[in-house]
Length: 250
Image (cartoon, rainbow, N blue to C red):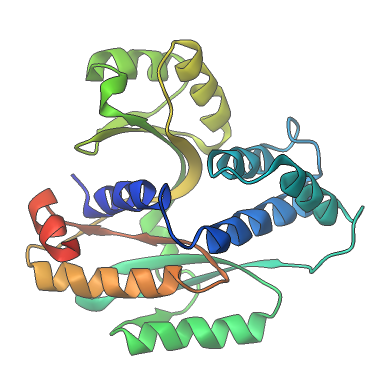
């Protein structure tokens, strides 16, 4: 099992009861605004917007708030203009990090992200230095109780999924980015409960970490980045056992 995947599941579980829900709402609303501005306000005709709206609804963002965010994105309502900016770098132990942000001030966000890296034992890198180690994928998380591995994979594969990953207490279905909605719809139509779905960057190579102290250093940087208001997602390519991760986060 990949450590990054287990950590993603841990974050997902934590998000459901996150005490900083206001910050989560703000990040989801930014995603909706940018998606609407770049691809239009039609949820069915804009897959990126559809994914952002689905995430917001899962997080219990009010429908009116979602609607207003779409209108700000399309220009029907006045609002701040956010820009999507990616940052690449390394955590301790040579772990690659790919950081997605939405910012209204590129210079400020860049300086602050670099500061977070340096304060937590990491370093930023030039564009392209890290991104080649990740592939864009659709990711769907289901509880382990959704069904047996073969049953879940059969439904997912028939709808276009590429892989099914065992995350210990959850299944992760990986799809081509364009097939995320189709596969999720097929899973739900088959009666399989879906916890969440999103577009992610899946590592193609991983850095094995066997020491809990090393994992803790990496997670400290990841958490510091995720705590920044402009940061939407952080992807890492470390690999560690469940036991080591539990010790590190415990």
